[in-house]
Length: 272
Ligand SMILES: Cc1cc2nc3c(=O)[nH]c(=O)nc-3n(C[C@H](O)[C@H](O)[C@H](O)COP(=O)(O)OP(=O)(O)OC[C@H]3O[C@@H](n4cnc5c(N)ncnc54)[C@H](O)[C@@H]3O)c2cc1C
Image: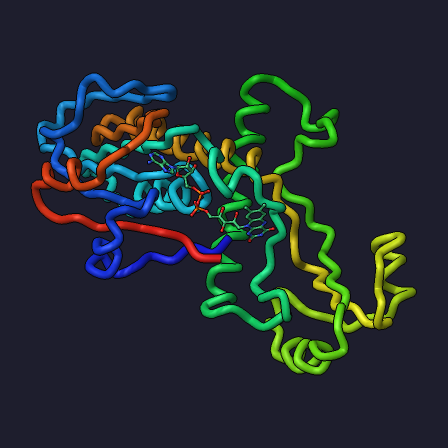
């Protein structure tokens, strides 16, 4: 679930990719595009808004939308159009297992794993805050959530060693864990106390006590809510005009959009 911002020139060669970030002219926005969620605001500021199209409403697309909003200056007029043919979480993100930690299956720290791990935790907090604020606004009690209602479970993850071949590598890798997501080697009994009936064929498992399990659909919907709330709060200040639209539609040919660019084109993808 890590996020990678790629060099625009490298990524722009991958025009057939189904997701990305496109910076385009406000004059080129189709007025016929349908919005399932739409926030519009007006202010006295006549300055032409910056416009961005974000392709895909999965982990990558929605975190890009959030960061774009955060990085826009207080005064700038700003519009983000998110396009997804299915809707929020319609791709891999919505169906993922939601296991979140900065390690590979052999518990090796991933490239920029610590940074991505910390950023991911921040986004989870943002999503949780957005949802609890909305519940409070609607007068709903915090308790009484159903089993599937969680955004994140902070109960750790256990990964058993499955082959003798990998055991030494995993043991070595585990030595290089980061302080904010520790890896402890544990025996079968301890592993089964944490996860009853877990199969631990080699009497060795790796426990990551700080690792978390995310409910991807709930998380993404709450992150989108956080984006909408942010836009609303900026608009109500009257200093600038900010806008966020979600279009449930396919983008068949990125080159057609690219042909309408005014200034520059950049794209964004994700890596595990
Ligand atoms: C079964 C499964 C389990 C997984 N479990 C984990 C896990 O436990 N932990 C983990 O870290 N990773 C896991 N992953 C990987 C993780 O889900 C992906 O790395 C991540 O979701 C990629 O996010 P994304 O936003 O880049 O892509 P996506 O979530 O696929 O987003 C792309 C979006 O673009 C939209 N789209 C595509 N084409 C078009 C088009 N032409 N026009 C408009 N919209 C379009 C799609 O509808 C989709 O919503 C799992 C993946 C799968 C499939």
